[in-house]
Image 1 (cartoon, rainbow, N blue to C red):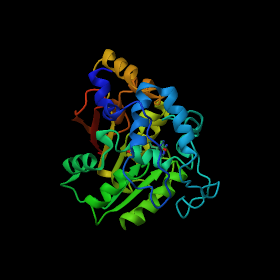
Image 2 (image 1 turned 45 degrees about the horizontal axis):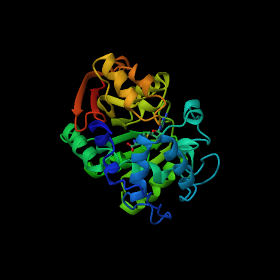
Image 3 (image 1 turned 90 degrees about the vertical axis):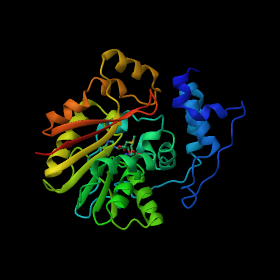
Amino acid sequence: MNATERMMSPQLTTLSGVEPEPVTFTRETIYQENTPFENFLFALAHQQPERAIELLHEWIETLPSYDGPADGSDVVLPDVKAPIDIPRHWIEKPVHFIPGGFANPKAPRIIYVARNQYFFCQEQTIKEWLWKVHGSKSPKRILDMGCGTGTTTFVYGELFPTAEVIGIDLSAPLIRFCREWKNQRRASNVSFYQENAEATHWANESFDIVHFTYVLHEMPQENARKILHEMSRLLKPGGTFSAMEVMYDETPEEREARVKRSPAAEPFLEEYMQFNLPVAIGEAGFECVERHYANKFPSTDGMFLTALKP
Ligand SMILES: C[S@@+](CC[C@H](N)C(=O)[O-])C[C@H]1O[C@@H](n2cnc3c(N)ncnc32)[C@H](O)[C@@H]1O
C-alpha cells in the first residue's frame, strides 16, 4: 500500500487479519458512529473489492429497511402525483457496490456511515465551508439537491435557523431516513422530499441558495447538465449556486490518474473527468464561477464551487 492509498483508507492501518463482526442495527440505533466492521469494509473496498462486495451483500441484508409504498406516495411533495420520473442510469448502473443502488430500502446505513469515511463529507467540514462562503448572507429558502442522508441539508438548517431548507433525493428510502433523523435532531426548519433534481416541481426563482454535495460525479454528463440548468431555473436573480464535488484536475494526465486510483464503485468517474464542471456551470447560465479548494488528502481532495445567477 502506498502513502496515497493509506491516506484514502486510514482505517486499513487497524487491519489485524481478523475480520471484525458486524453490529445489528434497528431504526432506533442506526445513528451510531461507524463500527470497526464498517471501517474495515470501507478500507477493504480499496484493497480487495471482490471480498468487500461479498461482505457488503451479506451485511446489507441485516440492516433496517426504510420501505414504504412502492410508488413513493409517502415522500413526494403534497401536490405531486407519485411515482416521479427516475433517470434510467440511477436504476441500471448503481454506484458504491450497493445492490439495487440508492433505491435499496436497506441502503441508508451505508450512506450514513460513508459520510465519516472521507473528510469532505464530514459534518464539521461541510459546516466550515458553507459558513465561509455563505456566512454573510441571509437566505430565506435553500435547496439541497441529492441530499442522501441529509448531512448538508441539516447543516444549512443549523447555520440559517430562520430559513426554510429543503433536501431532495431520488431515493424514497433515503427520504424516509432523513425524515426520521430530522425528528431525532429536532430540525424544525428542514424538510425532505423525493424529487428528481433534473426537473423539480418548484416555480422559477424559488430559492436564494441551490446546492449539491457530491452528486454530479455519479451520472452521465447529459443528466449532470440537466441538473445545472434546473439549478439556474430555480435560483432567484442574485442567488447563489454552491457545490462540493470531486476535483476536476488541471491536466488530462492528472484526471486519468485520479480515475485509475479510484475504486470501481464509481462507474461514472471517467465520464465526470471528461466533463469540466466549472465550465459547465458557466454554460448553464451562471456568472462569477469560483473554485475554492479543500486540499487535505492528495487523492481524495474535493472542490467547493460557487457561482451567481445574474
Ligand atoms: C454520493 S450521494 C451524496 C449524498 C449527500 N449529498 C452527501 O453528501 O452525503 C449522491 C446522491 O445523489 C442522489 N441523486 C442522484 N441523482 C439525482 C437526481 N437526479 N435527483 C435527486 N437526487 C439524485 C442519489 O440518490 C444519492 O443519494
